[in-house]
Amino acid sequence: MRVLFDGPAPVDYGQIYVTSRDLPDMERAFAGQTNGLCGAGHPGALFLMTGTHSGRVRFRIELHDTEPPTAAAEWEDVVEVSLQPRAPVVDLVPWGDGALAHLPLTSEEGDGGRLPVYRVRYCAAGMDEGSDPFGGLDPDEIDEDDHTYLDRRPDRYLLCFWPEASAGGDPGDGTVRVDAVLRQSSGNAAYWHGWARGLPAPLTLWERVEAEVRRRAEEDRRNEEYRRREELRRWNGRLPSERLREVRGNIHGMLLLDRDLVDGVADADAVTQREIAVWAARQACALAGIADLDWMRPAWTALERGGPLPADFIDTTALRTRIQGRATVTIAVASLRRRKAAPTDLLRAALDGPVDPVAMALPALVAAGESDPLQAALEALWAAVGTYASRRDEFLAAVRRAFPIVDQTQAR
Image (cartoon, rainbow, N blue to C red):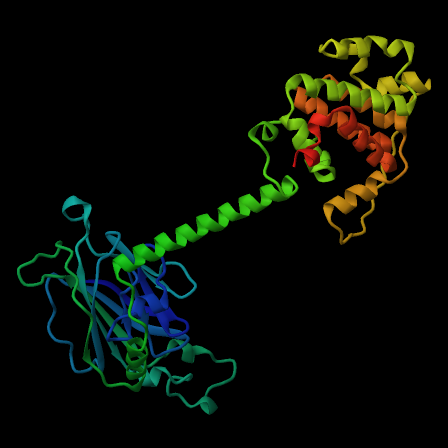
């Protein structure tokens, strides 16, 4: 026999643990058991109850080679459980603290890396006395600043381990016997035994597997539904085609404003999309009064030929300075007031505000030169919408007249 620990052990809430890894859950530890003093239902751990709620109790832990003799008469309450540790060394752990002591049950793992099963006997004496806050002492005889009574608890405990060896088996065969109440004398123990017996029966392994499968399936379903709804929100209530989903750039403004038009443009062929892009850029620049500037001619020529914009027409700030004859300064004003309105309502309110037509039209010119014709069309349309601002409905109607193929309302 070896003594693994012998000394005072702090307890809180009337509990202390032996763990391989994680701290045990109280109900899981005792569910399905007859005894309520030593819970072994949480794999690799023991949940130990004490009479003392808070204080330091005397605790002794022994490791035996074989089953020890019957517990001496001094031990009023005696229970047994089986434990299969998950590590060769387990820890004695007080509530809310780190390991108080390391308990080497074995130096090596069993065959195939499996640790042996141990039978554990938990013996208690003085549990009823320990449940008294002052441990049986008269509080009138204790100074108010004297807290040593917390270290002089009347209850004490013995925990014995030995390799489980059932008939015809060996300590490493994984056999686990049910728990047992070998002796009961205290009212405290009777209470906890009754509490444990009233717990719902623990789930079987198959039931736990099925429950986990259901949990994961429900989690996957909820995550998929969240992704679907989030995508619907981003695409204004209608999932996009794969072609539209691939488009980069600033297209979500058009999605919120006129989803039917976006789908119509996406369904058109590349030639039509390019024509829409150039047409929208011309409409925007015409409204801003800059479409027929002589020096703009190379840009229109390049766009009508389906080529990229000349480098001189890429920088909208430089173009605006050239048009207005002076450097420009852009001032952005944002309201921090929270508005309880739908995104489409906020978008329309923003478009109704005053705008500088030149500043809004130039991005349409640059957008029309994008290499992806669908992106070019949608970004040019969006820039033109910003140029028309409060008159945007006139522009959107003109798009449908100029390109009937994109009018999805007529198609339906």
